Image (tube, rainbow, N blue to C red; front, side, top):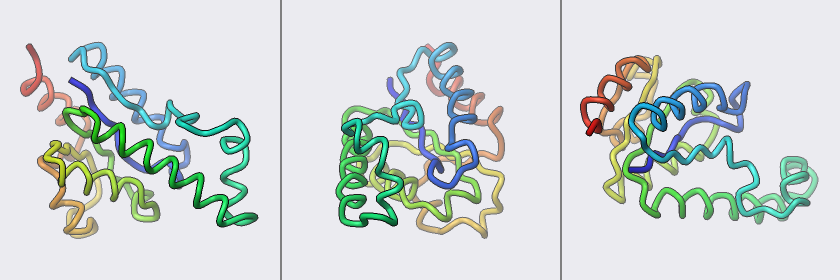
Length: 154
């Protein structure tokens, strides 16, 4: 079983590393699941030059930036579509500004991959489209962990 961790990176203060590290440890150590953590995989399929400069290119060289971002999009969606059993999504206020989480959840929904969301945001503040892509929505990490243990423990 493999989990994909979806949530804000670009606009999150810690680039989305904190919550991912915590849930990744639980998924690996308790459930013995594989985990794709995009915050840990910052190299992806980029050259050293692309990795070092693509954020600057967003303003300095938009066509070059788009080409690199498209490589990242293809890479992440290939991982998502290539055998992931479920998605864990952390939805917070930073997700509203980004686009990757929206795309990942939509792709998972279309592919029939379950999406389990953790959010403290009120449901009326979350797009109906996003909520429609989710199989379960939890208000806390302990709720999600209990659900995953019940669902996936051997």
